[in-house]
Length: 250
Ligand code: NI
Picture 1 (cartoon, rainbow, N blue to C red):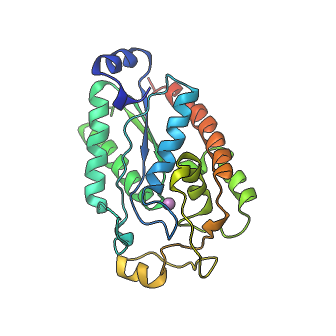
Picture 2 (cartoon, rainbow, N blue to C red):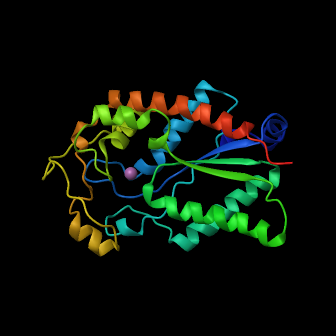
């Protein structure tokens, strides 16, 4: 079930069966000379929607597609929220869903740069309840799609070298599988990009001229992406069911 293709009455009904919702979350940012700007929100969305096709009653919310990407801002097309804005927005997404009665909010993330801010947003939400001396009434979980069970083992086998940390062949393969008409090609120089720290946008572009970090995306193929998506979707279904079944202490 996709929330944005449902009516309010269908969601009201769904809440009688399940109080769990999956929220793909990512970032719209440069991904090197061949990676789509949407890569980091497309990957969790592709995996969550594939999981939903396999398990039709899994409810997937609209994708939260803008994240903490200030360091990519010197590459055109990047759209970023500063951490403080991002935290406020995540808080209101959670409060909105909790207002309807959702109790398990599962964020499937596609951008490593989001992790610290999402976790801080969860802590703010829990802190509101702690200071008020109340139960929060809902729980949040964050999972990076590449950390779903079995996914990293496949990526390590597919890409023993040149996986890197940004514009990786695994994430680009996932988008190639879902959007074969948008596959791009380029001559990479060097073939494997450099690695180093992440600071402000001007520093980032000076260090990483074409936007990649440590990666050789030329190894990506749609077939490899399909294998990653299948494993990730299966693991997501399992993990969301386990999270949904978790009971609060009496
Ligand atoms: Ni990425």
